[in-house]
Structures are given as structure tokens and as C-alpha cells.
Length: 346
Image 1 (cartoon, rainbow, N blue to C red):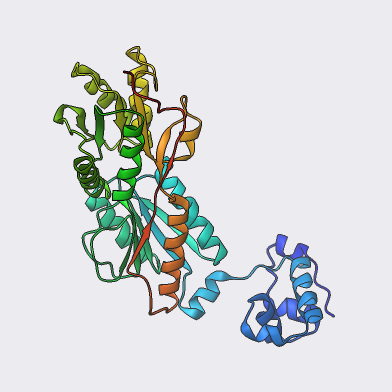
Image 2 (cartoon, helix red, strand yellow):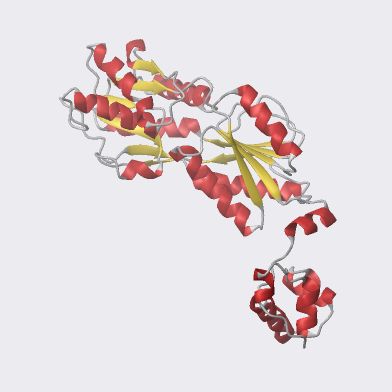
């Protein structure tokens, strides 16, 4: 058995696969099969496999993924283009992407589009040039196919080569509006999403359909169109102020997302209103901070992290040659009732 000091790597002498093989007195092919978990490794005795793994750890052997990618013509890299990175919606999805990619030994690179089509196109070109093998889009109205396998979260347009992951918005609207009407609310205000947000039109259409069926009046003065790209609670704050400025009484708000709901609550509180005693508020998404806001936010939960994990599973399956891949994946919402909703005042 050849003696190799672990310190060699620290001194700039990288421990190679051949060095590990020499250390254990086996062929480089055998060592490679074990360390790369190749199918042929199952035919190697467990005692031998354990000895190889122990030697690799002792010598601080690190595989050269760059060299491996050149040999296999693979980069094991996927691109993610999101609206933002730090907001609760995108970060929850990205957490799922990270978890799924890590489990499959893939790396991902993230770009931010901010609902700017030119910026999206620029990032998609850069990712392709840098060897991304597939792309996941987050909150972008993807209007065309991409030259790589792609998954859209959410996706609503049938583009060749793109898997769409989308929420059942009709059921989401039913959950929110039934909850509010069961509490006696009939004068309900609404925040519509930014026109460039991928879910905005579909969610609002669902709200209108369900409200019509439930005979809930959609007063135009109680419908606020969000035109800001802000990803902080300031998104909803000015629209909460605008609702109050109408001087017309409303008892509940169904906001486009949690961030806008939290901003609106601040506006209501500054005006001397108490949530939920004077106004009940329902958000959408169930971002991590929704449960810790005061009052904690009643919201429609999207399985955001799970959506990210599903996207990675489908995308990597396609990258690795699966032919029978899903074109569309529907996910279901649920309502999470917390402190921001209560019975309407009579």
C-alpha cells in the first residue's frame, strides 16, 4: 500500500484518483466505480468498497468535476431565472430547487428578471452560453419555447419543450371567499396582481368567476390594481391607503399575495383600524413570515418549496433522457386560518 500524506493537497499537490488507487493497491477503474457509485460497483465486495471510501476520506480526495464534465460533455448545471431572490415567494421555490438539485448532484445558477423581458432574454442567453443544461423560470410569463428543456413556475402558456407547474386558482378563490363569507363578510376589497406577474390574470379571473357564483359584489372602488414591482410590504401599503381614501366601508380584504396583505395591514393600523376586529385580511402564498407577522396572517398556501422540488425532478429527468415527461403539473392550495380574520361586525 502506497503511503500518501493528506497534507499533499494542502501544499497544492492535488490527490488524484490514481493516487487513491495506489494507496489501496487496486486498479483506478475499481476505485472510480466505487467513488462514482457506478452500477458495476455493486459487484465489488462491501469490505473493498468501504476500504476505498475510507482511503478517499483519509487522503482528502476530491473529484475533478470540471474534468469529468468535459469527458461526459455534461455540466450538471441548471439555470434559474426568478423575479427576485430575497422575497418570500421566490426564496421558498428556490429552497425547493436547491434541495432537489443537491440530492441529484446538480448545481444551479440564478438570475433575476424583475418582470423585464429584455433582462430575462439576456439571462437565458448567458445561462445557455455558460453550459446550463436546462432552465427553470419563476414568476415570468414565458411566451415562447427555449432551446433547452425548461420548467415554468407558474406556467400557463403551452410552449413546446416547457413543463408548466400551476396552482388550481379556482379552488384557491373558493377557499378564500368561502372563509370570508362564512364569517359574515360581504363588502370585500381585492388587490389584483401586477400585470406582468405570471399568475395575475388567471388568479383574478378565478376570483371573478367564484365571486359571481357566490353572489359577491365586485365593487370597482374596492378593486386595487397593483402596478409596483416592489417585493417588500411596501407593495401593499399605498393600496391599503387608497382603499381607505374611498371613504366607503369594507370589512375584508383578499390580497394578491402575503407581502401586499402585510403592507395593507400596516396602512389600516395607522388609520386606527384593528385587524381583524374592523377589517379581516386574507393573503396568498403562505411565505415564511406570514405566521410571524402580527396579527399572524390567514392565507392561501401554495406548496412553494414542493413546486421547486417537482420542477427539478422533471427537469433533470428530461436532461438525462426521459422521454415520457409531464407537460403540466397541477398543485392544490389550502387555506391556513390564523389571526387576521374574524367575524364581520354587525
